[in-house]
Length: 287
Image 1 (spheres, rainbow, N blue to C red):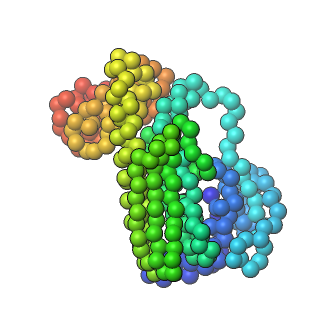
Image 2: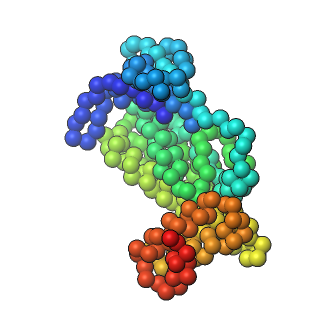
Image 3: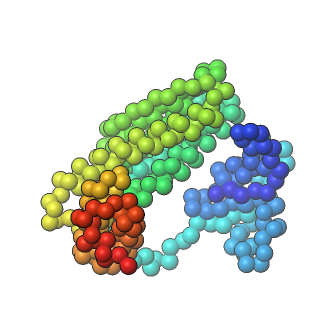
């Protein structure tokens, strides 16, 4: 995350100016899981928050006229006390490595668009609670890799994206074209399209993998994952399947906190949205 205090200019559809540009540049400097703030922000902090940030010197930022003094709050460092159930939960989640959007076009507006697309893809896909996402180069050795690229010729743009499995096989491809003047509106649409389709493809693949595991061999963590992935619609059957898997996860591993949380979420949603009698034995367990 990058944070800056500064003036911005607003029109009907957007805001822009150095206030926005500096924040974006600081975000690019931030370590994964960390925060970078400008000196303007640091000077406004009280004695409680200020000690959390470390001085990181003065940086010359791209397309910013004056150097900016920055302060960094590093990522949270694990104390090594992570419980076995938390480690098990993470180990059961499918992984998706999102490569940064690459473009060989040197124009600033194209590079800025590529950076914005990368951030949006991470935000959209990162909100999926059954999928573990990260941004980086290379290829995921155990999960999936999203490989986007942005081609530009004059004012024409083409976004090409593919999803690869851990063996390097391509499981999905996508292309979308636009022109530079329409890039802002197109950015939202193409990110939503890529995110929806990529997540659906991974969901189907992971569901098939778990379906191949004998029912009596499913672990508590696998039941939890099945319950999360089963709730893909607001149909009654989806609620029933999801809450039943969470119930099994709790029975198999009573110390799995995510199973309780997900069970409550699904059961309360079911209370609101469905009167299916099949849900009653599970709903009645929710306070």
